[in-house]
Image (tube, rainbow, N blue to C red; front, side):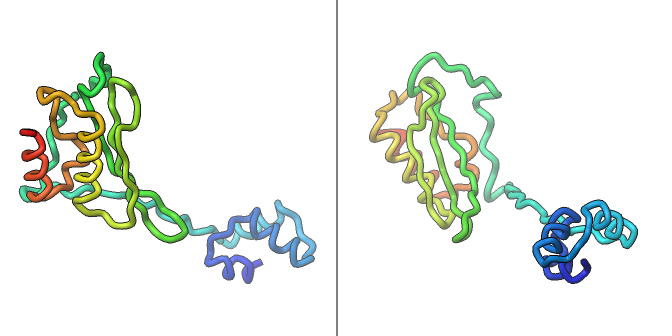
Length: 163
């Protein structure tokens, strides 16, 4: 039993240890394995979940919350919201950036890439503006995605705001 547990990098609980022992044709009972592991204080190590923490500072401030949790919008292209999420794949982390239109509840633009850079947000904003052509009076910076942008991207947005 200890050998199976050690070979699993101490990740198997009593159920998986039991299944592996049975697979190896070793006679045992599930409750017996649970009891032995409990008495000997053998417990699997739990993997820590990845937790992304945003870094806000003077150089990289958090954007103001313009919506204040008011997600009901009566007009298309009036309010867009955006976010970046991180997806673990067998080939590593991928970064997904999405812009949603709260008026239609549809995806306006999105991009998936393997590195996190300014272009992930500026690219989807540029595509969204070209495709949707929102009125100038409604153009505001998306709240959550832009907190990671540097001066280059903010300059891009200010230039786009005037077109």
